[in-house]
Image (tube, rainbow, N blue to C red; front, top):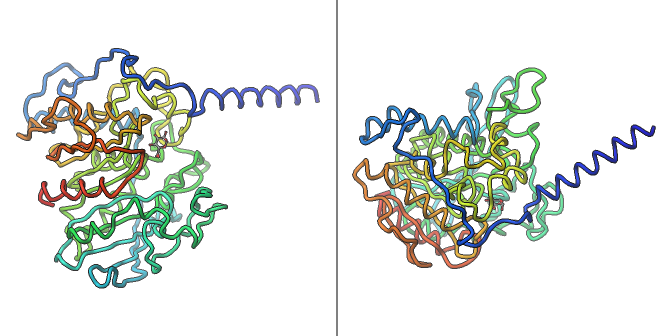
Length: 425
Ligand code: GCU
């Protein structure tokens, strides 16, 4: 009895201290002059020390090395292929007084006799024949991105979110349209682009629990979580984007050579990794993606490797945990993630009040990645200094620092549309 109580007490103390030290409130640095000097791993020097100075050596040797390092140490390996993907068209209709059409499609992934489904919401402008488009996850369900009454309410597990009326883990009508400010659907359609979105939780519910989502499809008998080197949630989300691309390649209404993968914050981390691992994404946008997205992890500014690992242990592979307070030992930094997308157009966006995501670290990452764009004959980010707020740099490598908080706004979408036009999407 005594031993049992002692164990309970010890477990409680351990849990509490873990929570305190792992909490996101942990002191992080927000002062530029307190950023300790760091040196970045070189994008264009191979693991064996060879300097890479041409596209062939980049593509044949260095790019695979970097991709392998991110897979093995950060996001994790996808354990295999699914057996089948079923496509079901559930609904089609018109939208925006006939300016666009809507399709709602369910993709079902089958593996080892188990299945997981994801619902796509697709808007296609009627003004173009085969629409170029933006593809990205939403945080709370397809029905939250628009007031469109025809959009199905997600049946998947959703996090409690009182602000949008979600009081249990079941989505409700009240939350319809609640996130529409983040999705400038009308502007996108008006500019001649389509939009494809899906709920992150369809692919993997965002919680530290590997019994659900696509992970469990791949488990061998008695397996309960991914292996040490296998995928976390971010890699699963990126995988999901590639499966959507598999579908888009078959959709006659869509120009699948002109798909820009988009994501905000944690979903921006996923869009970068999706573009890095799947060349079919012709462009990529990372909106306020921060730590382990676009921001350099070696700058100790805002969220750190340790903080993110402790607050969101399920996002990365098991191997990543060992870097918690040793980020300087990581074989990669995030400029290398962006470099994997070259020469395809990439847009990194920050916000002035989003210090948690380290706007300067995001800018520097894009700047550093430009060396690979240079190999392909593109200038990359032309400015060495961070631009002033609301002064976007649009090119193959684009960047802006929007005035305001961590969010996606009309202003951001206006720039993304300009970026798409500039890059001939
Ligand atoms: C947290 C997390 C970030 C993440 C963000 C989001 O703040 O620490 O890394 O980007 O959530 O997804 O909104």
